[in-house]
Image (cartoon, rainbow, N blue to C red; front, side, top):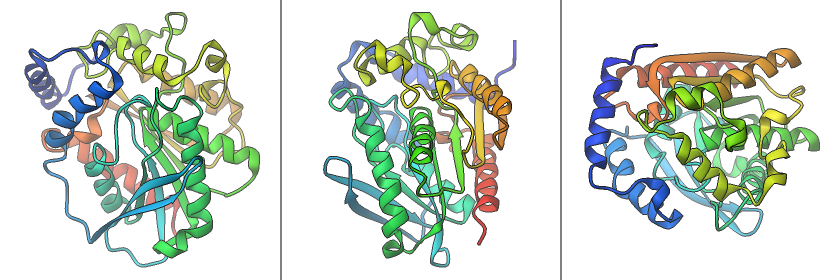
Length: 318
C-alpha cells in the first residue's frame, strides 16, 4: 500500500472533522450540494489565495446565452498567452469561486492569463450542454480574445476532475472542426470513464470508500446527473476514453495516487501512447483528489502547480 503524505493525512482528518454531523453529498439534491460546498469547501481552501495584478469578470456568448468568464491577469505583457480553464465538480457542483485560488496560482506559475469558464451545470443542463459552452468559449476567445489582451495564437485549455473531462472533450470537438488550433491541454486528475457498476476500476475499489475526499458513490451520483441515459455512456464526447486520440496538441496528464480516478489517467495515458500522441504523465505520490486546492496545508500542492505552470510556459512561448 502506498503511503499518504503526512500533511495530506492531517488534511483528511480536518475534512472528516468538518463533515461530522453533515449529510453525505449523495443524500442531497444538486442545489443543496452546491450550497454545502459554498459554505465549507470554498471559503476554507480559498483563504490563502494570492493577490494578482488584475482580475476581470466578463461575459461572452455561450451556446445558449451569455456565459460568465473570469479573467486572471498576473501582470503579463500583452497580448498574453492564456489558459482556458474548466473547473471541476462532477459536472454538477463547482463554480468560478470554488476554483478562484487555483486559477490565480496557475496564472502566477505560468506567467499567463487564465480564463475560467462558468459553463452550465447538470442536472438542469445535462450533457452536452456544459461541453457546448466550453467549446463556444474557446471559439470566442480564439476569435475575439484580443479585446481582453489575449494572444489567440497562444491558447491552451485545461481543467481538473470533470473539468479535465470537458477539456479533453473540447479538444476532441475542436479537432473535428479543424479550428481553432490550441497549443496544449492540461488534464488534472480527470474523469474519462463512465461511472457505473459495470465500469468499476481497481483504483475506485482501493480509494473510493470515501476516506480520500472523493468516493465511488459520489462519482456515480455525479455521472447519473450528468448524462441522460445509457447511450451517453458510449459517446466519446462524454467518455473521452472511447475517442480516437490522434491529432491532439501536447497534453500534460496528472494523477493523484490516492484517488478513485487514478486509473482514469493511467488508462488514458496507455491509449495516448498507443496512438503516438504527444503527452507528459505525472503521478503525484501521497495525495488525493482535489489536492491542488490545498496549498494552505499541503506544501507539495504549490510544487505541483509550479510544475504545471512551467510546462504551460514552455508550450506557450512566443
